[in-house]
Image (cartoon, rainbow, N blue to C red; front, side):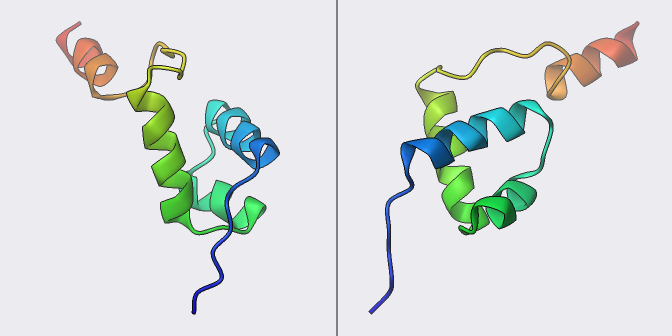
Length: 69
């Protein structure tokens, strides 16, 4: 049997906070003591629901824009 547990609300808030501080998913996972897959699953769910703020300057689109300039 696996020892599954649900992430708490405080852990989820830490994922959001540390992601805004540009920490990697693996760094966040080690700080919270969960797997990086768990962090990635939560990260995707909040992105899918559009609860994540659109931070300018991150992602492929901004990299392409810089190359075109």
